[in-house]
Image 1 (cartoon, rainbow, N blue to C red):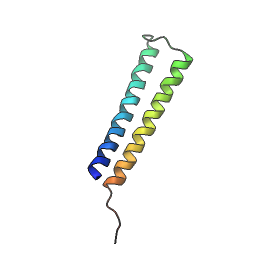
Image 2 (image 1 turned 45 degrees about the horizontal axis):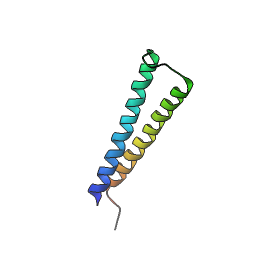
Image 3 (image 1 turned 90 degrees about the vertical axis):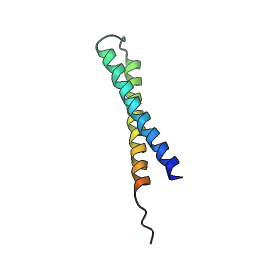
Image 4 (image 1 turned 180 degrees about the vertical axis):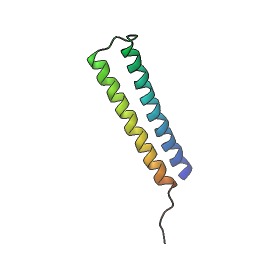
Length: 73
């Protein structure tokens, strides 16, 4: 069971990092004018970056909680 939970959390961490990396690359392309910048595109890229941060931090938090020893007595 814990192996399945750890795989889920690692997947969330990887997904969050991927979303943030994708947002960074697309923003960079927009700044150097490879992609035409627009308000809607910038808003979507900001939302993508924020979603990646939230998903990644959630995965990291639950990963740490799963690795932590329980305080059962």
